[in-house]
Amino acid sequence: MGFYVDTAEMKKAVEEYQKLSKTAQSQLNTAKNAMNGIINSNALSGKVGQAISADINNNQNAVIVGLKSSYLAVEMELRQAYQDFKGTTGETSDSAVLSEEVLIKAKSDIDKMKQTYQEQVKSFQSVYSSISDLISLSASKSDFNQVADATKKYADEIIKKVNQFDSKQGNSANEDMIQSLSTQIKAAQKVGGLGYTDPR
Image (cartoon, rainbow, N blue to C red; front, top):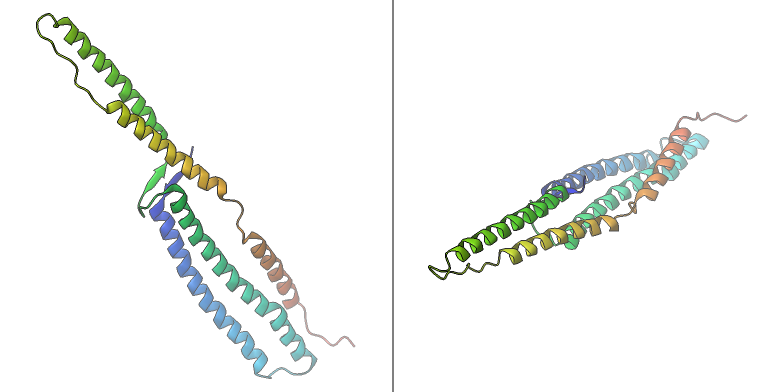
């Protein structure tokens, strides 16, 4: 099975992610402000207060900033991929459906129609030939073959362009950042599980 691309679904996915990203950004800002509120309140003092402040600054806020950055980066990457798809394929419609299976079948159907057309032309020529002693007729000219060949070529170009776009797509540039962020979150969770005790 080859590709199947619904540009309306692509556009909708980008828009839905943008909404999700906006909501997440707002929630992350609220969380960061709450964390900073703990530090700025001066409610915690001594070594424990310093340790909690350091944890918030070095771990919690770093994770929040990383999450915000990752949401924005993925959003930009999705928008860029959508624009790259449209640019590479030349597809301008926001509601096009491109299916390799359908395009291949269409090419096969065109070949069958061309064969049927050729058989009909030969049949007409045979009939014209058989009555040529009575009346002189010639088959009408048609550009059917040229139109059929141009249509097949267009289908081939669509397949080529979608595959060209697909081959350009490597791993996400954001995978390393997200993996690093995941590691940092796990480390922060471990630190959060430690008790603050006096080492004496």
